[in-house]
Image (tube, rainbow, N blue to C red; front, top):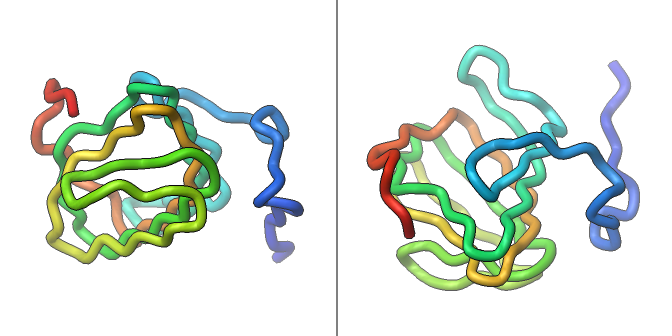
Amino acid sequence: MTPEVLQGLLALAPDAVAFEPFRPGVDIHHIARSVDGGPGVALLRYRAGASVPRHRHAGLETILVLEGAQTDDAGRYVAGDFVVNRPGSIHRVWSDEGCLVLIHWAAPVEILDEDEQA
């Protein structure tokens, strides 16, 4: 099987890959799409002010911030920061100025407060 390669990821132009809507203000580009609730890898692009409501991690999730800044209930993470969310952790995520992150998850999250805004 041939690997999917995103060459020059750190210098990636925003329009270099196709994104699709994920949540209001957040778009996704699946690098390795999750199958049957399994692991996945993607790029998430947050527009300024976009958020993801409070959710629980069923499995390990790692995030590398590539551009901008992402904030959660524990802190603010800027380009170059690597975040590890352990199974069972709960938080909200938002980006005041917008950001691009590389995300890997072992299992999909459980949304706890669908209508909540960060």
